[in-house]
Length: 232
Image (cartoon, rainbow, N blue to C red; front, side, top):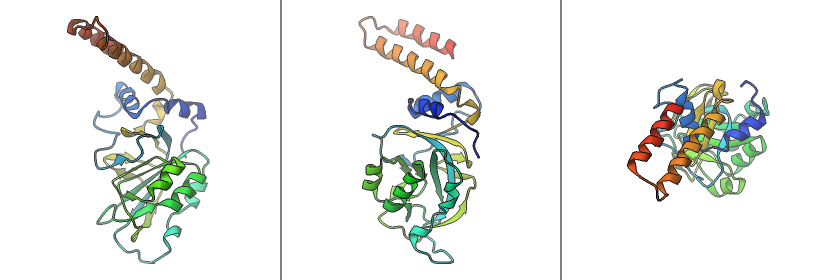
């Protein structure tokens, strides 16, 4: 189970976009700068929604290959895995089939069930379906594609490490996401990130205001950028 992080801190993290979160993490130099965020193989399907935050609850599925034991598709998600915790949950689904995204595990009905169980969003390298239901529920979704069918989708593993669009995600990892993409937030840095992100945001706003002012010059811009670099 993830360590306790206050609801106030989780809400504070959603005040920043994912780019600001990534920039703040970068200053701590705890991982390479090309790690911890998604590549272009998935995208945010609802960029108008507010940022998402929650702990990863992981699944591995196959959607293009038939299961050994056929079952009704609504029975194919292990809901009891989600009942063990009341923390906000980001559902992370790695499709390991031969044709990822051929079918969707989460659609109209599953989205409603997940929302009722405290899910704050869905991430998959496969497909989702029933986008209007996601819109009604205001459920953030990050996926490779849409599918009209569940096809043969079935759960292979629950609660194991997964890799989604280049992001290694363990069960319980803290995930932030918005229109720009998803970021895996180091839990031990979570409490320190808002202060850093706020400082970086203020610097960006200073540069933006200066660029729009009558005093703009490249020499002065260079000084502002250099001062900002020394503050990091």
